[in-house]
Amino acid sequence: MTADAVVRAFPVDAATAWALVADPRNHGRWVPLTRVGLSTDAPGVGSVFTAVSGPFARRGAPGLADVMRIDRYDPPTDTRTGVAEFTKTGHVLRGSASIVVVPAGPSSCRVLWTEHVWLAGPVPHRLTEIALRPFLGGMVRYALMRASSEVRATDHH
Image (tube, rainbow, N blue to C red; front, side, top):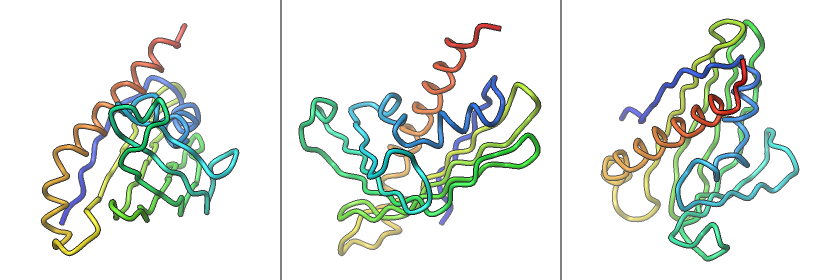
């Protein structure tokens, strides 16, 4: 089963894009109806974070918890691709996600965000993965569009 993957060009160097998109604390700004809490001050291998989504989640109300552990967190350099890999370990959502930042020059890069997610429980995960794919694909496209827009809005060159 293939995962849903979205690629978007960013008009900044890879390190700047990495600091923005690979840090899960920023995701709450772009994913609608979602707040994100991280178990440590800064993300890194072994960090656990929870994205809670729901109508009033940003105001502290309960919602659907997506618990993730960072398994790889290798920032890019001018010539090397950066890779962040996450494992979803929650009671409802299982699977993996990754964010890859590919340098494309001194002031540009490409960001690839992949989600491979299914529901825990008795229903075969292939079925729930297929059911979730349109929602997750839309969420990732929207998040990367908002992150890219944020970069463009603060770019003063």
